[in-house]
Image 1: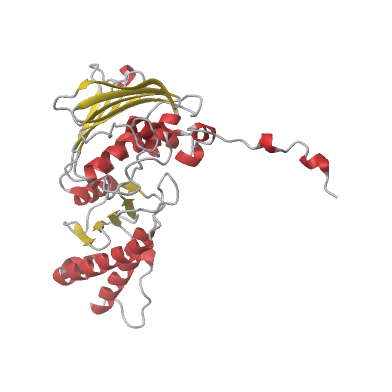
Image 2 (image 1 turned 45 degrees about the vertical axis):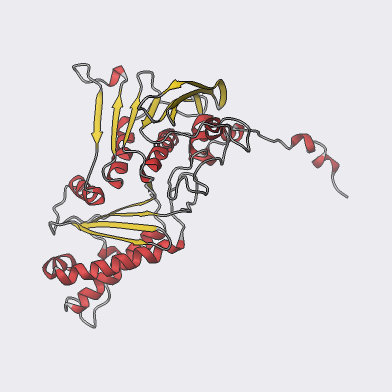
Length: 389
């Protein structure tokens, strides 16, 4: 016989339904991973990622990221802005849908974004939910629209306040909620690393970052500012990382390879350079998201690298028949590399996008690295021997 004492306090009243953005505020870790420093800075990434997606779509070339004097952060781009008509299904302005409704946006299908990293409506609405306040100023199709939210709720309704003139794009400013996060003080150096990555991965896109907090000004009272733009893309990225490693390259040129699978609309870029150090650094990205836990693109890269180096070592007589193959750790010793893939319907293991799961990417990266590296070794035998040695 069931023990009624066990169930008497558990009935329909105990089944809660969290509406709107309440679920995000209740369990923020499910959406941003943590409420410590990493989660705090992830808020900025989510808004910037949406601007970067506009850049990947070919509609944005300039992004300004500012830590304001009051400690809030603003992000402004010169993209298309967010459509601002009344949303047919939701019955409210589309701009409001994007910032208040989870799993609503232009990146789940259709022609708005073929490739994206941030998810408009997931990232934007989560940032809104976890902010003390957020203000949006949107220039779309020549008209300017504004809204204000507090803790995810609309407090200044959607309004068209006039014409934009030549201006276009989205401006978002938010103050993270101190009731949610352990600390709400942004670290400029933490943010600038991510902004630099984005400009390396998107050659020609300019990101200007500023810190207007009075206490962060230099001795002359000038705010800190960085203007980032790299035409060399991932090649420049590897050169930068090699310089940071304080090791000397063992070959002067960065080995670069790129391939596109037209049928699957997947592009893979790889750049690598060996140095005389012992450590390895493989930075990987999927749709500009830093996949710090790797994924299928990194697996394909490492497998191709191991096979190609071992094959060349045997062909050149460096490894004899009786010798064992070089191990994976041997092959990446002294390696600095960047592996970047861009694909539709990227599958990440979580909202923080730390690991890529698309299986098809593995073979695409494997084939490009194997084919291009074999070709490079054949055309540059002196460099190949230095690398293998």
